[in-house]
Amino acid sequence: MPDATLLAHTEEQTALIAQCFAQQLQSLKDLRIDLHGDLGAGKTTWTRYLLRALGVEGRIKSPTYALLEQYELPEHALEVFHFDLYRLEDPQEWLESGLQETAQGPGLKLIEWPQKAGELLGTPDLTLFIEFLPTSALQRQFRLQAHSAAGQQLAESVLTCVQ
Image (tube, rainbow, N blue to C red; front, top):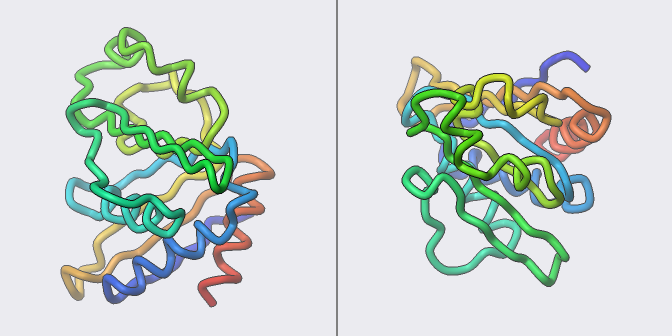
């Protein structure tokens, strides 16, 4: 599947894209989505919208300092692992974190700044690139790149939902 691109001109449209992901609940189980984008591009914001759409209540913290925030959604029989690897200085720190098994295990894994772990993470099911559009600070481009059959199915379902 070639890369698919979605545009969000408002915060509401960004939330809608996340809601379309959440509607594909069965496709999200045991899936890994890597999130790429410049600092401030909206990776954590999009993740918060997704977690809210999945039913997470209360405060949703950025895992920048802890590296991982975990959410259990028993009503969906789903665990979500939100990683943020921004603070890692080199891939060896990823190995030393002890989180490799979690990143390869069951549940939905959302990984911001996966490049900080180098090749140690392996290939995700789906990569989501979030980029600023030069016309407005609120506008974003979301580019989906599937790397597995499950990632491709999710990307196609999300595209259908958004359109």
